[in-house]
Amino acid sequence: NAGVTQTPKFRVLKTGQSMTLLCAQDMNHEYMYWYRQDPGMGLRLIHYSVGEGTTAKGEVPDGYNVSRLKKQNFLLGLESAAPSQTSVYFCASSSLNTGIYQPQHFGDGTRLSIL
Amino acid sequence: AQSVTQPDIHITVSEGASLELRCNYSYGATPYLFWYVQSPGQGLQLLLKYFSGDTLVQGIKGFEAEFKRSQSSFNLRKPSVHWSDAAEYFCAVGLMNTGFQKLVFGTGTRLLVSP
Image 1 (cartoon, rainbow over the protein chains, first blue to last red):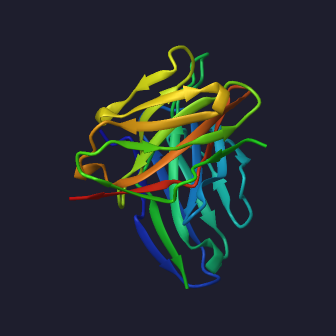
Image 2 (cartoon, chains in turn green, cyan; image 1 turned 135 degrees about the horizontal axis):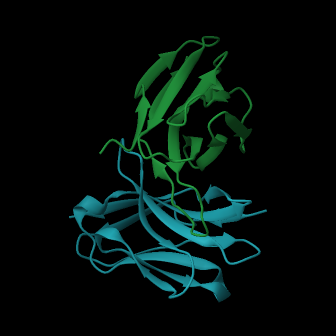
């Protein structure tokens, strides 16, 4: 069972470079999320999507863009990477809340270092 | 604003001993509460959740948690810790907003298990 798959798992960038992180889920979930995890700060929501073609800002959206062209994929882009974006990035997905709160399922993370 | 506090950054427990990880939340209504576990290099795995009803909830891997409204707490417990339980544990509050769910995470507690 694949669940939520993130690629790549590791990446090192130079300041100013751009890259895209890919998240794919095979559970037909409507909601998808991007978080960043930093030491001593838990997980913070960057952007999220409530369906194909829709995205919204989370808690820490600056410096990131996202797209959800297909229901199963959620892309996180860094247009001009900065050292402050060195972090571990997690993607998550969850199904529609039809009166019952559905838990989020997480990928294994992408460790990104910006030099 | 909603918040989750995990007051212990690190906890060391002897193998076979009991465990309690503390979690306090700040939220105006009855929240949805979760405990996630993160093993090194892995994503977050849901241990258990509380939505309503019985305030003592059972989860996977022998964990349980008790919701105490009067103390705004949702502490995680395990009667006998195994070496494989060494990981980082996150408490989270789930918030609903017109069907979309948002998770607010605590900063995590790292559990170390000594022989």
